[in-house]
Length: 482
Image 1 (cartoon, rainbow, N blue to C red):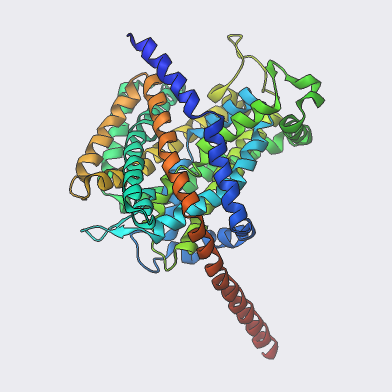
Image 2 (spheres, rainbow, N blue to C red; image 1 turned 180 degrees about the vertical axis):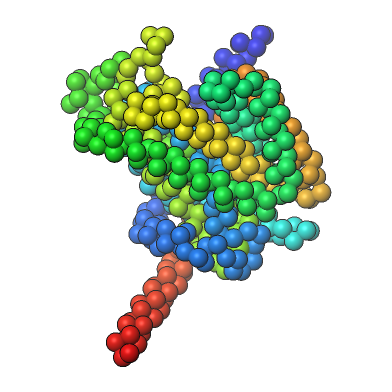
Protein backbone atom coordinates (compact mmCIF):
# COMPACT_ATOMS: atom_id res chain seq x y z
CA UNK A 1 0.00 0.00 0.00
CA UNK A 2 1.51 3.36 -1.04
CA UNK A 3 1.61 6.53 1.07
CA UNK A 4 -1.24 8.15 -0.88
CA UNK A 5 -3.55 5.22 -0.05
CA UNK A 6 -2.56 5.30 3.63
CA UNK A 7 -3.17 9.05 3.74
CA UNK A 8 -6.57 8.60 2.10
CA UNK A 9 -7.63 5.94 4.63
CA UNK A 10 -6.43 8.01 7.59
CA UNK A 11 -8.23 11.06 6.18
CA UNK A 12 -11.48 9.07 6.00
CA UNK A 13 -11.05 7.89 9.61
CA UNK A 14 -10.39 11.51 10.61
CA UNK A 15 -13.64 12.68 9.00
CA UNK A 16 -15.55 9.90 10.82
CA UNK A 17 -14.15 10.58 14.33
CA UNK A 18 -14.75 14.32 13.86
CA UNK A 19 -18.22 13.68 12.43
CA UNK A 20 -21.65 14.68 13.78
CA UNK A 21 -21.55 12.23 16.73
CA UNK A 22 -18.29 13.68 18.05
CA UNK A 23 -19.50 17.27 17.68
CA UNK A 24 -22.79 16.32 19.35
CA UNK A 25 -20.90 14.76 22.27
CA UNK A 26 -18.70 17.85 22.66
CA UNK A 27 -21.50 20.42 22.53
CA UNK A 28 -24.03 18.14 24.24
CA UNK A 29 -21.74 17.68 27.25
CA UNK A 30 -21.42 21.48 27.51
CA UNK A 31 -25.21 21.90 27.30
CA UNK A 32 -25.82 19.23 29.95
CA UNK A 33 -23.24 20.67 32.37
CA UNK A 34 -24.51 24.23 31.83
CA UNK A 35 -28.03 23.15 32.74
CA UNK A 36 -26.73 21.06 35.67
CA UNK A 37 -25.06 24.10 37.29
CA UNK A 38 -28.14 26.25 36.56
CA UNK A 39 -26.19 28.47 34.10
CA UNK A 40 -23.92 29.68 36.94
CA UNK A 41 -20.90 29.71 34.61
CA UNK A 42 -22.69 32.19 32.34
CA UNK A 43 -23.99 34.29 35.22
CA UNK A 44 -20.55 34.40 36.83
CA UNK A 45 -18.63 35.29 33.66
CA UNK A 46 -18.30 38.97 34.77
CA UNK A 47 -16.85 37.74 38.08
CA UNK A 48 -14.43 35.46 36.21
CA UNK A 49 -13.27 38.25 33.86
CA UNK A 50 -12.75 40.56 36.85
CA UNK A 51 -10.64 37.89 38.58
CA UNK A 52 -8.45 37.49 35.48
CA UNK A 53 -7.78 41.23 35.24
CA UNK A 54 -7.21 41.72 38.97
CA UNK A 55 -3.83 41.97 40.74
CA UNK A 56 -4.63 38.81 42.70
CA UNK A 57 -4.46 36.74 39.49
CA UNK A 58 -0.76 37.60 39.19
CA UNK A 59 0.03 36.67 42.78
CA UNK A 60 0.69 33.21 44.20
CA UNK A 61 -1.89 32.44 46.88
CA UNK A 62 -2.29 28.84 47.98
CA UNK A 63 -0.49 25.77 46.63
CA UNK A 64 0.78 25.38 43.07
CA UNK A 65 3.68 26.07 40.69
CA UNK A 66 2.68 29.27 38.82
CA UNK A 67 0.32 32.22 39.35
CA UNK A 68 -3.34 31.93 38.24
CA UNK A 69 -2.71 34.41 35.40
CA UNK A 70 0.39 32.51 34.22
CA UNK A 71 -1.58 29.24 34.22
CA UNK A 72 -4.29 30.87 32.09
CA UNK A 73 -1.71 32.33 29.67
CA UNK A 74 0.01 28.97 29.29
CA UNK A 75 -3.35 27.33 28.56
CA UNK A 76 -4.19 30.15 26.11
CA UNK A 77 -0.77 29.69 24.51
CA UNK A 78 -1.86 26.20 23.50
CA UNK A 79 -5.38 27.22 22.35
CA UNK A 80 -4.92 30.62 20.67
CA UNK A 81 -3.23 29.40 17.52
CA UNK A 82 -3.71 28.88 13.81
CA UNK A 83 -7.37 28.00 14.45
CA UNK A 84 -8.08 31.65 15.23
CA UNK A 85 -6.66 32.83 11.90
CA UNK A 86 -6.89 29.90 9.50
CA UNK A 87 -9.72 27.97 11.22
CA UNK A 88 -12.20 30.86 11.17
CA UNK A 89 -11.48 31.57 7.49
CA UNK A 90 -11.87 27.87 6.65
CA UNK A 91 -15.18 27.69 8.53
CA UNK A 92 -16.56 30.80 6.82
CA UNK A 93 -15.51 29.53 3.38
CA UNK A 94 -16.91 26.01 3.88
CA UNK A 95 -19.96 26.95 5.95
CA UNK A 96 -20.56 30.59 5.01
CA UNK A 97 -20.52 33.67 7.30
CA UNK A 98 -23.14 32.01 9.53
CA UNK A 99 -20.50 29.54 10.76
CA UNK A 100 -19.32 32.33 13.08
CA UNK A 101 -22.67 32.25 14.94
CA UNK A 102 -22.29 28.52 15.55
CA UNK A 103 -18.75 29.13 16.79
CA UNK A 104 -20.24 31.58 19.33
CA UNK A 105 -22.98 29.13 20.38
CA UNK A 106 -20.52 26.26 20.87
CA UNK A 107 -18.22 28.61 22.83
CA UNK A 108 -21.03 29.60 25.21
CA UNK A 109 -21.53 25.99 26.24
CA UNK A 110 -17.79 25.40 25.98
CA UNK A 111 -17.37 27.83 28.90
CA UNK A 112 -18.91 25.24 31.22
CA UNK A 113 -16.92 22.36 29.70
CA UNK A 114 -13.67 24.31 30.20
CA UNK A 115 -14.71 25.26 33.74
CA UNK A 116 -15.61 21.66 34.66
CA UNK A 117 -12.48 19.97 33.32
CA UNK A 118 -10.22 22.58 34.95
CA UNK A 119 -12.00 22.49 38.32
CA UNK A 120 -11.86 18.68 38.45
CA UNK A 121 -8.17 18.70 37.44
CA UNK A 122 -7.28 21.00 40.35
CA UNK A 123 -9.49 19.14 42.82
CA UNK A 124 -7.90 15.78 42.02
CA UNK A 125 -4.30 16.87 41.26
CA UNK A 126 -1.23 15.34 42.91
CA UNK A 127 2.31 16.46 43.79
CA UNK A 128 5.29 14.64 42.28
CA UNK A 129 8.59 13.77 43.99
CA UNK A 130 10.08 17.15 43.00
CA UNK A 131 7.23 19.03 44.67
CA UNK A 132 5.65 19.98 41.30
CA UNK A 133 1.94 19.78 40.63
CA UNK A 134 0.68 17.10 38.27
CA UNK A 135 -2.92 17.03 37.19
CA UNK A 136 -5.33 16.84 34.30
CA UNK A 137 -8.15 14.55 33.14
CA UNK A 138 -5.98 11.44 33.64
CA UNK A 139 -5.63 12.24 37.36
CA UNK A 140 -9.32 13.22 37.54
CA UNK A 141 -10.24 9.76 36.26
CA UNK A 142 -7.68 8.01 38.46
CA UNK A 143 -8.63 9.80 41.71
CA UNK A 144 -12.23 10.86 41.08
CA UNK A 145 -13.86 7.66 39.84
CA UNK A 146 -15.33 5.26 42.39
CA UNK A 147 -14.47 2.42 39.99
CA UNK A 148 -10.67 2.68 40.22
CA UNK A 149 -10.01 0.14 37.44
CA UNK A 150 -12.18 2.09 34.98
CA UNK A 151 -10.52 5.33 36.06
CA UNK A 152 -7.06 3.85 35.57
CA UNK A 153 -7.84 2.52 32.07
CA UNK A 154 -9.49 5.74 30.89
CA UNK A 155 -6.69 7.83 32.41
CA UNK A 156 -4.08 5.76 30.57
CA UNK A 157 -5.93 6.14 27.25
CA UNK A 158 -6.29 9.90 27.67
CA UNK A 159 -2.60 10.30 28.51
CA UNK A 160 -1.53 8.12 25.56
CA UNK A 161 -3.61 10.09 23.05
CA UNK A 162 -2.47 13.38 24.62
CA UNK A 163 1.21 12.48 24.08
CA UNK A 164 0.51 11.53 20.44
CA UNK A 165 -1.47 14.75 19.86
CA UNK A 166 1.27 16.84 21.48
CA UNK A 167 3.80 15.75 18.85
CA UNK A 168 1.33 16.27 16.00
CA UNK A 169 -1.17 19.10 16.42
CA UNK A 170 0.82 20.62 19.28
CA UNK A 171 4.20 20.52 17.59
CA UNK A 172 4.85 19.49 13.97
CA UNK A 173 1.78 21.08 12.38
CA UNK A 174 2.43 24.35 14.23
CA UNK A 175 6.10 24.39 13.17
CA UNK A 176 4.99 23.70 9.61
CA UNK A 177 2.61 26.68 9.70
CA UNK A 178 5.43 28.93 10.93
CA UNK A 179 7.99 27.80 8.33
CA UNK A 180 5.41 28.13 5.54
CA UNK A 181 4.41 31.65 6.61
CA UNK A 182 8.04 32.79 7.01
CA UNK A 183 9.02 31.30 3.63
CA UNK A 184 6.14 32.84 1.67
CA UNK A 185 6.34 36.27 3.35
CA UNK A 186 10.05 36.76 4.01
CA UNK A 187 11.67 34.18 1.71
CA UNK A 188 13.55 32.38 4.51
CA UNK A 189 14.21 28.67 3.87
CA UNK A 190 12.24 26.12 5.89
CA UNK A 191 15.51 24.55 7.06
CA UNK A 192 16.77 27.81 8.56
CA UNK A 193 13.40 28.44 10.21
CA UNK A 194 13.44 24.89 11.57
CA UNK A 195 16.88 25.38 13.16
CA UNK A 196 15.88 28.69 14.79
CA UNK A 197 12.58 27.25 16.07
CA UNK A 198 14.29 24.17 17.50
CA UNK A 199 16.93 26.20 19.36
CA UNK A 200 14.32 28.64 20.74
CA UNK A 201 12.00 25.80 21.77
CA UNK A 202 14.80 23.90 23.50
CA UNK A 203 15.99 27.01 25.38
CA UNK A 204 12.50 27.66 26.78
CA UNK A 205 11.15 24.12 27.21
CA UNK A 206 14.14 22.73 29.15
CA UNK A 207 13.31 25.24 31.91
CA UNK A 208 9.95 23.54 32.54
CA UNK A 209 6.57 25.07 33.41
CA UNK A 210 7.98 28.14 35.16
CA UNK A 211 9.99 29.23 32.10
CA UNK A 212 7.15 28.34 29.72
CA UNK A 213 4.64 30.31 31.82
CA UNK A 214 6.94 33.36 32.01
CA UNK A 215 7.31 33.45 28.22
CA UNK A 216 3.58 32.77 27.69
CA UNK A 217 2.62 35.59 30.10
CA UNK A 218 4.42 38.04 27.79
CA UNK A 219 3.83 36.53 24.34
CA UNK A 220 0.12 35.63 24.66
CA UNK A 221 -1.24 39.02 25.82
CA UNK A 222 1.17 40.82 23.46
CA UNK A 223 0.25 38.87 20.34
CA UNK A 224 -3.47 38.97 21.16
CA UNK A 225 -3.44 42.76 21.59
CA UNK A 226 -1.49 43.24 18.31
CA UNK A 227 -3.92 41.04 16.38
CA UNK A 228 -7.06 42.51 17.97
CA UNK A 229 -5.89 46.11 17.39
CA UNK A 230 -5.14 45.35 13.71
CA UNK A 231 -8.50 43.61 13.32
CA UNK A 232 -10.35 46.50 14.99
CA UNK A 233 -8.58 48.92 12.62
CA UNK A 234 -9.86 46.90 9.64
CA UNK A 235 -13.38 46.81 11.11
CA UNK A 236 -13.40 50.59 11.78
CA UNK A 237 -12.16 51.31 8.24
CA UNK A 238 -15.09 49.25 6.96
CA UNK A 239 -17.54 50.40 9.63
CA UNK A 240 -20.26 51.14 7.04
CA UNK A 241 -20.13 47.48 5.96
CA UNK A 242 -20.49 46.06 9.49
CA UNK A 243 -24.35 46.14 9.59
CA UNK A 244 -24.51 44.20 6.30
CA UNK A 245 -21.72 41.88 7.49
CA UNK A 246 -23.62 41.12 10.70
CA UNK A 247 -26.81 40.61 8.67
CA UNK A 248 -25.03 38.03 6.50
CA UNK A 249 -23.55 36.30 9.56
CA UNK A 250 -26.91 36.03 11.37
CA UNK A 251 -29.14 35.24 8.40
CA UNK A 252 -26.78 32.66 6.88
CA UNK A 253 -26.60 30.86 10.22
CA UNK A 254 -30.35 30.22 10.32
CA UNK A 255 -31.93 31.14 6.94
CA UNK A 256 -29.42 31.21 4.04
CA UNK A 257 -32.22 31.27 1.48
CA UNK A 258 -33.09 34.79 2.64
CA UNK A 259 -29.73 35.94 1.26
CA UNK A 260 -29.70 35.41 -2.49
CA UNK A 261 -30.84 31.82 -2.27
CA UNK A 262 -27.94 30.87 -0.02
CA UNK A 263 -25.27 31.81 -2.56
CA UNK A 264 -22.46 34.23 -1.70
CA UNK A 265 -19.95 34.72 -4.49
CA UNK A 266 -18.62 31.25 -5.23
CA UNK A 267 -20.03 29.76 -1.99
CA UNK A 268 -23.33 27.91 -1.64
CA UNK A 269 -24.43 27.83 1.98
CA UNK A 270 -26.76 25.62 4.02
CA UNK A 271 -27.70 25.74 7.71
CA UNK A 272 -26.22 22.26 8.25
CA UNK A 273 -22.88 23.27 6.73
CA UNK A 274 -22.78 26.49 8.76
CA UNK A 275 -23.50 24.51 11.93
CA UNK A 276 -21.07 21.70 11.14
CA UNK A 277 -18.06 23.86 10.27
CA UNK A 278 -18.82 26.51 12.90
CA UNK A 279 -18.98 24.01 15.76
CA UNK A 280 -16.02 21.95 14.48
CA UNK A 281 -13.70 24.93 14.03
CA UNK A 282 -14.92 26.56 17.24
CA UNK A 283 -14.07 23.46 19.26
CA UNK A 284 -10.76 23.08 17.42
CA UNK A 285 -9.90 26.70 18.26
CA UNK A 286 -10.78 26.88 21.98
CA UNK A 287 -10.33 23.16 22.84
CA UNK A 288 -13.22 23.26 25.33
CA UNK A 289 -13.96 19.66 26.30
CA UNK A 290 -10.66 18.35 24.94
CA UNK A 291 -9.08 18.24 28.40
CA UNK A 292 -5.78 19.85 27.41
CA UNK A 293 -6.26 23.15 29.26
CA UNK A 294 -7.05 21.25 32.46
CA UNK A 295 -3.46 19.95 32.58
CA UNK A 296 -2.10 23.51 32.78
CA UNK A 297 -4.83 24.67 35.16
CA UNK A 298 -3.63 22.04 37.64
CA UNK A 299 -0.28 23.88 37.94
CA UNK A 300 -1.89 27.10 39.22
CA UNK A 301 -1.47 28.36 42.78
CA UNK A 302 -4.95 28.67 44.21
CA UNK A 303 -6.80 28.38 47.49
CA UNK A 304 -9.89 26.90 45.80
CA UNK A 305 -10.29 24.78 42.65
CA UNK A 306 -13.48 26.60 41.65
CA UNK A 307 -11.82 30.03 41.83
CA UNK A 308 -9.08 28.96 39.38
CA UNK A 309 -11.60 27.14 37.18
CA UNK A 310 -13.49 30.41 36.69
CA UNK A 311 -10.20 32.08 35.67
CA UNK A 312 -9.34 29.31 33.20
CA UNK A 313 -12.90 29.29 31.87
CA UNK A 314 -12.33 32.75 30.41
CA UNK A 315 -9.84 31.19 28.00
CA UNK A 316 -12.79 30.13 25.83
CA UNK A 317 -14.16 33.70 25.97
CA UNK A 318 -10.86 35.31 24.93
CA UNK A 319 -10.18 32.70 22.27
CA UNK A 320 -13.52 32.46 20.49
CA UNK A 321 -15.73 35.37 21.53
CA UNK A 322 -12.90 37.92 21.15
CA UNK A 323 -10.11 36.75 18.80
CA UNK A 324 -12.18 34.56 16.44
CA UNK A 325 -14.87 37.24 16.25
CA UNK A 326 -12.26 39.82 15.21
CA UNK A 327 -11.14 37.53 12.36
CA UNK A 328 -14.74 36.76 11.37
CA UNK A 329 -15.94 40.37 11.32
CA UNK A 330 -12.84 41.47 9.39
CA UNK A 331 -13.57 38.85 6.71
CA UNK A 332 -17.33 39.51 6.65
CA UNK A 333 -16.95 43.30 6.31
CA UNK A 334 -14.10 43.21 3.77
CA UNK A 335 -16.12 41.81 0.87
CA UNK A 336 -13.45 39.22 -0.05
CA UNK A 337 -15.44 36.14 1.06
CA UNK A 338 -16.54 34.20 -2.03
CA UNK A 339 -14.06 35.92 -4.36
CA UNK A 340 -11.23 34.35 -6.34
CA UNK A 341 -7.49 34.88 -6.03
CA UNK A 342 -5.03 35.78 -8.79
CA UNK A 343 -4.88 32.12 -9.88
CA UNK A 344 -8.64 31.97 -10.37
CA UNK A 345 -9.35 29.66 -7.39
CA UNK A 346 -11.59 30.76 -4.49
CA UNK A 347 -9.81 32.42 -1.57
CA UNK A 348 -9.85 30.24 1.56
CA UNK A 349 -7.80 29.55 4.69
CA UNK A 350 -4.83 31.79 5.35
CA UNK A 351 -5.14 33.45 1.90
CA UNK A 352 -8.67 34.60 2.77
CA UNK A 353 -7.60 36.14 6.08
CA UNK A 354 -4.60 37.87 4.48
CA UNK A 355 -6.83 39.23 1.70
CA UNK A 356 -9.32 40.58 4.28
CA UNK A 357 -6.62 42.38 6.28
CA UNK A 358 -4.70 43.57 3.20
CA UNK A 359 -7.82 45.03 1.56
CA UNK A 360 -8.09 47.42 4.50
CA UNK A 361 -4.57 48.23 5.71
CA UNK A 362 -2.47 47.19 2.71
CA UNK A 363 0.69 45.11 2.87
CA UNK A 364 0.92 45.79 6.63
CA UNK A 365 -2.13 43.54 7.01
CA UNK A 366 -0.31 40.62 5.38
CA UNK A 367 2.67 41.10 7.70
CA UNK A 368 0.44 41.28 10.79
CA UNK A 369 -1.35 38.05 9.83
CA UNK A 370 2.02 36.39 9.17
CA UNK A 371 3.45 37.58 12.50
CA UNK A 372 0.24 36.46 14.19
CA UNK A 373 0.62 32.96 12.71
CA UNK A 374 4.27 32.82 13.86
CA UNK A 375 3.59 33.96 17.44
CA UNK A 376 0.32 32.05 17.82
CA UNK A 377 1.83 28.81 16.50
CA UNK A 378 5.08 29.11 18.50
CA UNK A 379 3.19 29.71 21.75
CA UNK A 380 1.02 26.70 20.92
CA UNK A 381 4.19 24.57 20.72
CA UNK A 382 5.21 25.77 24.21
CA UNK A 383 1.77 25.21 25.75
CA UNK A 384 1.33 21.77 24.24
CA UNK A 385 4.78 20.70 25.42
CA UNK A 386 3.60 21.04 29.01
CA UNK A 387 0.37 19.16 28.23
CA UNK A 388 2.31 16.31 26.62
CA UNK A 389 4.96 16.26 29.34
CA UNK A 390 2.44 15.76 32.13
CA UNK A 391 0.69 13.03 30.13
CA UNK A 392 4.14 11.43 29.56
CA UNK A 393 4.84 11.63 33.31
CA UNK A 394 1.52 9.94 34.03
CA UNK A 395 2.28 7.06 31.63
CA UNK A 396 5.68 6.36 33.23
CA UNK A 397 4.53 7.10 36.78
CA UNK A 398 7.59 9.28 37.47
CA UNK A 399 9.08 12.67 36.57
CA UNK A 400 12.54 11.15 35.91
CA UNK A 401 12.05 10.86 32.15
CA UNK A 402 10.56 14.35 31.64
CA UNK A 403 13.83 15.82 30.36
CA UNK A 404 13.97 13.15 27.64
CA UNK A 405 10.51 14.21 26.50
CA UNK A 406 11.50 17.91 26.51
CA UNK A 407 14.59 17.32 24.36
CA UNK A 408 12.84 14.96 21.90
CA UNK A 409 9.84 17.31 21.65
CA UNK A 410 12.15 20.23 20.81
CA UNK A 411 14.03 18.25 18.14
CA UNK A 412 10.77 17.12 16.51
CA UNK A 413 10.02 20.81 15.86
CA UNK A 414 12.67 20.73 13.09
CA UNK A 415 10.95 17.78 11.39
CA UNK A 416 7.65 19.62 11.47
CA UNK A 417 9.15 22.77 9.98
CA UNK A 418 10.79 20.99 7.04
CA UNK A 419 8.41 18.16 6.02
CA UNK A 420 5.00 17.84 4.33
CA UNK A 421 2.59 16.80 7.02
CA UNK A 422 -0.80 15.73 5.62
CA UNK A 423 -0.55 12.28 7.23
CA UNK A 424 0.80 13.64 10.53
CA UNK A 425 -1.97 16.25 10.67
CA UNK A 426 -4.71 13.65 10.17
CA UNK A 427 -3.19 11.18 12.66
CA UNK A 428 -2.81 13.84 15.35
CA UNK A 429 -6.31 15.13 14.58
CA UNK A 430 -7.63 11.62 15.28
CA UNK A 431 -5.58 11.45 18.52
CA UNK A 432 -7.07 14.82 19.51
CA UNK A 433 -10.59 13.45 19.11
CA UNK A 434 -9.74 10.21 20.92
CA UNK A 435 -8.35 12.10 23.95
CA UNK A 436 -11.57 14.13 24.11
CA UNK A 437 -13.82 11.06 24.42
CA UNK A 438 -12.61 9.79 27.84
CA UNK A 439 -12.46 13.40 29.09
CA UNK A 440 -16.09 14.08 28.12
CA UNK A 441 -17.23 10.79 29.63
CA UNK A 442 -15.43 11.62 32.90
CA UNK A 443 -17.11 15.05 33.07
CA UNK A 444 -20.53 13.46 32.58
CA UNK A 445 -19.81 10.87 35.29
CA UNK A 446 -18.54 13.54 37.70
CA UNK A 447 -21.27 16.10 36.88
CA UNK A 448 -22.70 15.80 40.44
CA UNK A 449 -19.26 16.79 41.84
CA UNK A 450 -19.15 19.79 39.48
CA UNK A 451 -22.62 20.89 40.60
CA UNK A 452 -21.77 20.48 44.29
CA UNK A 453 -18.55 22.52 43.97
CA UNK A 454 -20.23 25.31 41.97
CA UNK A 455 -22.98 25.82 44.53
CA UNK A 456 -20.54 25.57 47.44
CA UNK A 457 -18.38 28.32 45.97
CA UNK A 458 -21.38 30.49 45.12
CA UNK A 459 -21.62 31.32 48.82
CA UNK A 460 -17.97 32.48 48.70
CA UNK A 461 -18.72 34.77 45.73
CA UNK A 462 -21.72 36.29 47.49
CA UNK A 463 -19.66 36.85 50.65
CA UNK A 464 -16.84 38.51 48.69
CA UNK A 465 -19.34 40.78 46.94
CA UNK A 466 -20.90 41.77 50.28
CA UNK A 467 -17.48 42.49 51.81
CA UNK A 468 -16.50 44.58 48.77
CA UNK A 469 -19.76 46.55 48.92
CA UNK A 470 -19.32 47.15 52.67
CA UNK A 471 -15.73 48.35 52.16
CA UNK A 472 -16.86 50.70 49.39
CA UNK A 473 -19.64 52.10 51.55
CA UNK A 474 -17.24 52.59 54.46
CA UNK A 475 -14.82 54.45 52.17
CA UNK A 476 -17.62 56.75 50.99
CA UNK A 477 -18.69 57.47 54.56
CA UNK A 478 -15.08 58.18 55.55
CA UNK A 479 -14.65 60.64 52.68
CA UNK A 480 -17.95 62.30 53.59
CA UNK A 481 -16.79 62.63 57.20
CA UNK A 482 -13.56 64.32 56.06
